[in-house]
Image (cartoon, rainbow, N blue to C red; front, side, top):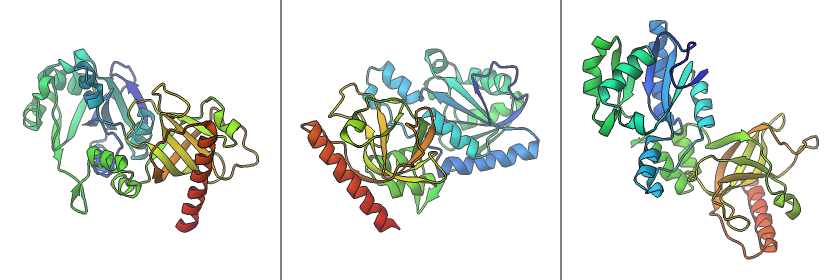
Length: 318
């Protein structure tokens, strides 16, 4: 999959079948839409393309209003979103910066300058709640009416349901906030996971006897938080069982930075420190919320209990 920041690039596709959205989590509803998009692209002989935004528009408006706490919790990092789009067979992704200028763009300018002239869309597929342009004034009817003049067909996909529940990013966020990892996996069509490069931490885990692999989560409010039973991919021939903390580490740091710290229950003998490796961590079961321990000794004892609980979970799961 080719990824572009913006659409002013000579190598961008000269025509495409396009869908537009935030695609946070790339859940089963998104996957159904992307499958339809790929099919329409093949029929037209053009690549499939996703237009997405960073930051999330609701992040932008929350910050602009001075109420960052009203921004939606983030399910996936941009890296993971793009990885899932590629896994779904999308051939081109365009990431647009959502800023003041873009937010003020009239719907007509979005259709003409972005969809037609910028991305050369020949087919545009949107969801049933799609709105666009300044003050969300544009809707499906406006897009459908303008399509013939701008050179693209327009289609709308209705909601996707699982067991009578509409699959949405909001539903995934609710499941993750509740620690219901099985529910989240059912909505996503896969276990919830976070990936990235292993980075240096404070080396505190090593001092406590529980060395960890650390991944940064680049958003202040992750949809999931707490202590989890996990499975780690990318360290060897197969996945490794582990226990992980996702959050701000209240016992050892008060900086608000979100970190995923993973301790493998059994470390490969040939594994070095792992720095720079790209790993993927599946969050399988939530043990409990983050806790602030009164001392490092109490923290060490808490980690030991979490490790024992993770081992017990894997014994019961197999």
